[in-house]
Length: 74
Image (cartoon, rainbow, N blue to C red; front, top):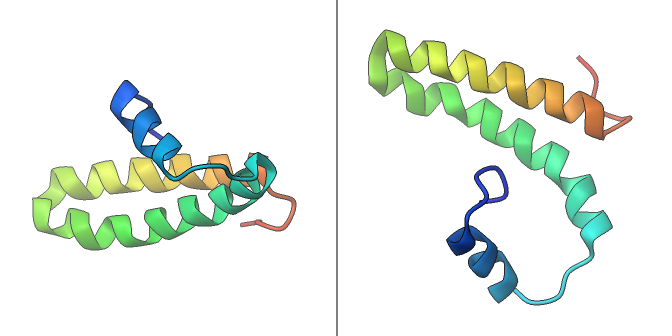
């Protein structure tokens, strides 16, 4: 939900209640990498176009993670 902001997503996140923004930011790099890891499994069902999109998302996730964490390298 944080990757595709919308009023609905903002409302859903707010429904979880108070949270530590720093902890969320630290965890987001790892969540991003997890989502990148499972993307090819889902995209495989979509054929060649799905694989191309999966690679784009993986590249984007890795770039994001590298800018957000000093412990994620690759």
